[in-house]
Figure 1 (tube, rainbow, N blue to C red):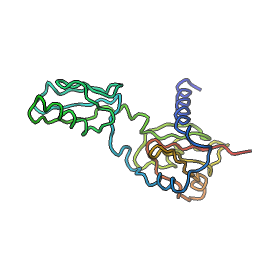
Figure 2 (figure 1 turned 120 degrees about the vertical axis):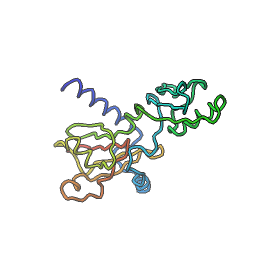
Figure 3 (figure 1 turned 90 degrees about the vertical axis):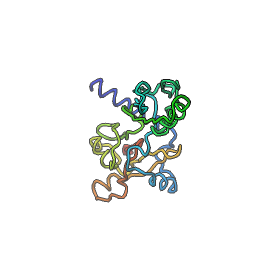
Figure 4 (figure 1 turned 90 degrees about the horizontal axis):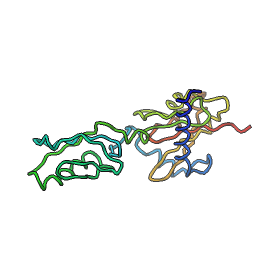
Length: 214
């Protein structure tokens, strides 16, 4: 195995362990928690883009080119803007950041018009991914795409290996601080066409396929 694939495998495993550390074994969550998790919107990769460290933003101030800059969000979550200095960016949407800069610039410029455009989305490199671990041919971590389902990511991982317990698969989804375990019957999907558990994936989801007990 090449160093590249070994590193990727270790990274996927590390991320999965960190995400699932709060889960107790392979037991599904309560029906109430499962229904709440499945009700969360899955259509878009991000419902509202929230800025974070390593993102790069283009700040434009109308008719003030000397105040318009392209700048990365620093590790402390701030950006430096001419005249006003440091402004908190992490945790805000681009519109909210533009509003904060506008309010600060109003001390120096009459009715400033500010826009913020994200030109590089580095902070979402991992938070907007989905992952497949366990008894598959190749554990993967891939960017979320609108319309992506459990079956899509399972097949992207090369399908199951010979030890997989497909109907014991579990989809883990973080909802309001809780990690919800949602049962997925992959064998029913593949061999019977019963697609009720072919759920849509959401950014951050992890699909895990355990091995059979011998």
